[in-house]
Image (cartoon, rainbow, N blue to C red; front, side):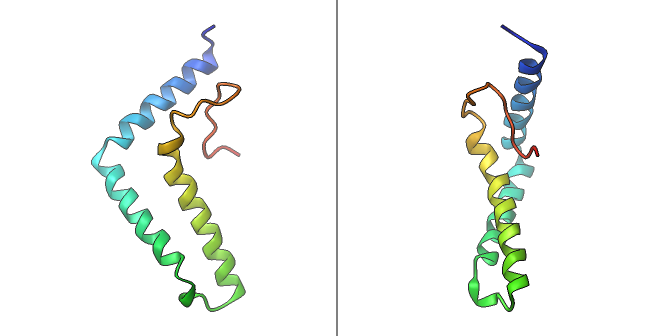
Length: 85
């Protein structure tokens, strides 16, 4: 059964597929991967606060980069809940 919600979800997926094919996404993805590598360098951590800050940034970057791979992963309830809180 097609619902408004399922149409909204499919529209979001289509928009994301289009974005992932764009040159802009490729550039952003490259920059995010570089930032993630930098943040993972433990030699640059100088305090507990810095560690917590870096962990948070790495978690968000990982979440953003994971959207592309999870786009086609079906959810049990047919939802598409990326970056939603």
